[in-house]
Amino acid sequence: MNFPQGGGCQCGSVRYEISGPPSVVYACHCTECQRQSGAAFAMAAVIPGEHFRIAKGKPKMFLRRTSPVKTMECWFCADCGTRLYHVPGGSAYPNRNIKPGTLDDTSWLSPTIHFWARSAQSWVRIPEDATRYETQPDTLAWTGPDISASP
Image 1 (cartoon, rainbow, N blue to C red):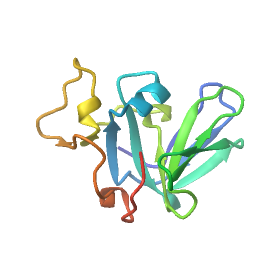
Image 2 (cartoon, rainbow, N blue to C red):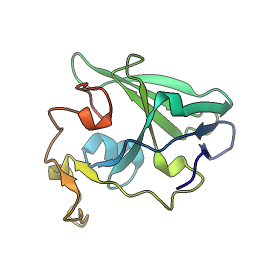
Image 3 (cartoon, rainbow, N blue to C red):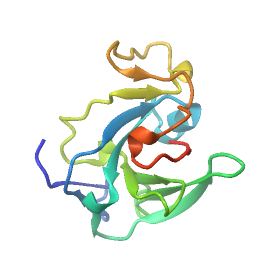
Image 4 (cartoon, rainbow, N blue to C red):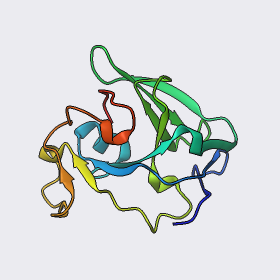
């Protein structure tokens, strides 16, 4: 994979650029991610904040409660609704969990961690060499700072 890489929404109103590789690419099989993605699971590529920038447009944000005490910023295109990235735990979290399907080049993507595997669709095959969690991991240290937040 070469950097920088670009990505954006379906209509082209919002574009972003990443200038470095993700710390991890993961798949979440929780029912909330299935609903949000409209698919069997959702993926995220965790990009250090210093390697992410909005190059065009202005995404809109809604705050989703992930527990009684936790929230997640969910950023999307206000024109076409494409979900672009998440910020678990809010602005204190330094990384951007981009929706990797919004990248222009997705050929290099392969999730190495799968969580909420107990909610995975029965036909989904998680690779044997992938790290697997039946629910939410106790720590998300592999995403950057050790925070306890929802994907």
